[in-house]
Image 1 (cartoon, rainbow, N blue to C red):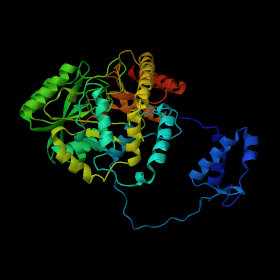
Image 2: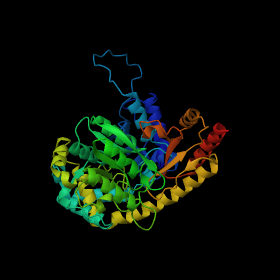
Image 3: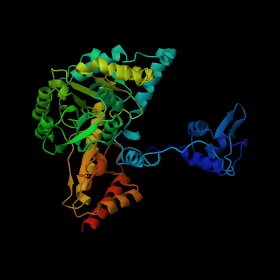
Image 4: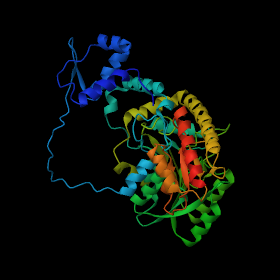
Length: 472
């Protein structure tokens, strides 16, 4: 994570305020004093004070300077409350931490968060475009927007997918609050509680949790290294079970990084049409290809309307841009109703931001640069894994996306390995979070979407040494 120059003095002041050394109302050193003491520029010092003000620790008084806003009371007596305790699902909370949560914002690298790291997010582009949107739209951004999203934004998304041969009717696109909401809407449109849904195995935790939350049953379909989703296994399952939907990530599957070839995509579609099973296609990583050509989506082969495709800009632009979309195919009416009850509309500023980015060439320019960064980091991490880990380990070489899927030798004590990684803040995601079967206990996912540093390489080397020790 980026280290700002002003942190050389803000960390000291913050600690002194929290410990009560500096008390409420006390005047702080002037900008000039701090500038001279820490050899900083005036703008850096002012940025530091603004940071402390945002945290509520400092307040500004015109012509008088900066003062301590409050002093934490460290002697507050315990208060009895009648509120019931919050009952939490321990397994759910643990899996959220393992798959997506960072321990501290100050950590310089992570291998478990499938989102662009701070240093890979195009901050200047996003913030500059947001400022333009605010100036142009003003108070209109504070009103409700159409529940299904801006018409022009849906048209721009359709134009974007058409570049790669996927023709989508803009009138069948629904703008969503991220990819997970798009998945939930799609599932709600084609299933009822108690229905059976087929899903890839392994599958990302959030997909499994969304299915469970809707009261659905799961059948896992194996993923193979050669061509991904096992279409023959799926067809056999369909002959003996009433499958109401199948969820797939054909392009740069999470966690394995595998791409289904076009023949497998067509075969899956053929089976789905034969049994009239809706395909819910997650194409969130499709734009993050490392080769010369983007892989085709299943939707690009579909003329039946059975394929529902969804994606999000959180993975390609910034994790805080909560804006996704769902192409509903023949299931528009039920999808529209499901979308409406989840909230009146998606954030207007995000919609206007993405509209402006898609109308120009800045988003495509960012994607080209982002793919190069990811490709370089994937190779760097993959080489380190193969260099430091036991020789009979396996690491799948990704052709796009964020993930490397690894497997350690069967003789490895995985509990000890993950305990060591956890204690040393080496944030891999254990394989057992990606399935309900227990088939992936010796697997783990490594994400290379954060900036790779010397510290990152050192962590991988340390984990590799431990794995070799445990595999002996």
